[in-house]
Every structure is written in C-alpha cells, then in structure tokens.
Amino acid sequence: ADEIERVFGGISRAIFEMVKGETAASKMAGLNAMDALIEVESEELRATLITRFANYLRLTLPCDDSPTMQLAARVLGHLARSGDAITADFVDFEVKRALEALASSPRSETRRLAAALVLRELARSVPPLFYMHAPAFLRTMWWGVRDPSRQVREHTVQALRAVLALLSVRSARMRAKWVIAVYEETMRGFEA
Image (cartoon, rainbow, N blue to C red; front, side, top):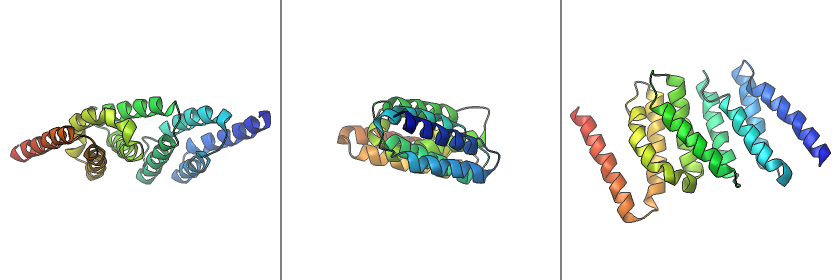
C-alpha cells in the first residue's frame, strides 16, 4: 500500500505540473492522464483520487483555450460517473458553482463557457445526481441561452437538451411542468 501511494503521489505531482502548465498541450496532456487514471482499481486511493483530480480540473475550468475546457469538462463528467460516496458532494458543488458562473456579472465569456460545458457534461454523465438541480438549471440557463457568445449559447442549449432528456424519464406531471415553463420563457424571448 505504501509503494502504491508513493507511485501515485509521483504521478499525481506530474499531472498537477502539466495541468497548471502554460500551454494548452501541457494542460491537455495532464487532462488525458487524469482521464486514463480515473478508473484505477484501488479502494484506498479512490477518495484521494477524486478529490485531487477535481481540484486539478478546477485549474482548467475556465481557461483561455476552448478545446482544453471541453476536454476538462469531459474528464469531469468521467470523474463524476466513476461514482462513490463523495461523488454526490463533488457533483453538487460543481453544479452550484457552474450555475453561479453562468448567471454572473460582469460577463466573463470563458467563465460562462466553462459553466455551460460543466453543466452539459454533468447532466449527461450523472442524471440522477443532476436531477435535484434541474429546477435551478432551468431558471438559470436563460443567461447562457441569451449570451452574446455563440459558443456559450450552443453549449448551454446542449446542456438544456441533456436536462430535458433526464426530465423525460421522470413523472409525466413534472416533465410537463418544466417543458411548459421552458416553452413559456422561450415565447417571452421572442416577444422581447
């Protein structure tokens, strides 16, 4: 066990250095390494791995490179899917952080893009954990849908698609309530 922890510590430090590196290539190398290690079969390292990798991902979300942020969001979704007891807390924190960023002012395009990407990936990757945040998402996502940036709008709509898909498997009454709310807000947007 000590040998495993020592080796993992060395690998983890190398990943950290790559993720905090100056270039997109360095960040992406670190992200790909994280993605490869997420499924490691070691119970004693599991909680450490999720916590550590979640913190490393926060270094790349947001950043100035859109492909890097897209990869980071996919790795975040993979990390959330890997699941265990602390995953629910991690997903809860990330969804709340992303919703806050999506509705934040002053506008920071990279921050809002990162938020839309995170929301999309978490809604796709862990629908049962995201479900409790669906009402807040459906209230907040309009900021992203009406954003001046095409990328933010597109990724917010992709997140909306994922949320509507997760709502579609829930009770018909709840599904109808939220679909009607989205429709009505959409119509108000056309009238404005």
